[in-house]
Image (tube, rainbow, N blue to C red):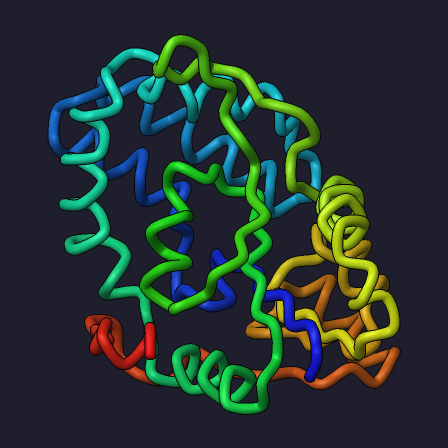
Length: 233
């Protein structure tokens, strides 16, 4: 048995769930197009460059969550999952998760994207445990701010250590991490078996120098949808 940590965006998904959620809301006319589209792409570029202000991004990304009741948000989310997320799931990603599941490993999705968006995506992959950035809630409504430590860069390691603290039996367990981004170097360096997945330039260079495996999980065409029943078996 091992511990396996999966990044989500551009790792298990052939795309970015956070970016696509905003695009979905724009396309549905739920948020304004001109400003939201520009700001969304600016934050995406900051993330790629390693300069993202996660709290500033959260104020932008969580604003629609704070504006609407949870019931309405869940209806939009279900449509978003079907239209935007399922086509980003590839057979290679499903096979990797299934390989570790059959080995009896404990599977954890760990992502900077907020838990409202990512909890049902983890369910699509049949991954029970989720460590994600948490939007603050009050009176059954979301607020446009982060609760606690964001699951981003060093924050992923801090959140993971907190998660492990309540599971002392896992302290000596062999661990893997799969990620595409140099932003996850602190997490990749934390585990026994770091693996670069379709890595960005900086991570690819680091993986090559350190002899880390490099995987391609995005070979199949977009539009692959899984049998959800088998994923949860």
